Length: 107
Image (cartoon, rainbow, N blue to C red):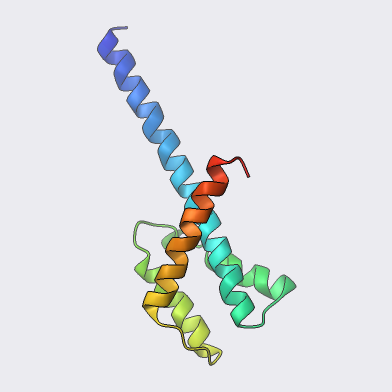
């Protein structure tokens, strides 16, 4: 195996590791966002857990947070709670930073 091959394998391994961490951070962020929204909607226990599961759908864990934000805004609005897309996006970004920090700290 050449040095180039070893470097290529190293880059591939790092990429795979980074993608796994990204997925874990997005999933954790969505759970935290679901908990925040569920609290606003007065959902607790099994009802809050069921809501969290809806935010873990594969199409909401992708590269586009717009779907996630639209869903949360619509879910809140259906319960008579007005939150702007910008407010939900800000909360989502805040919770993503927290999720990344927790994962890096091993929590």
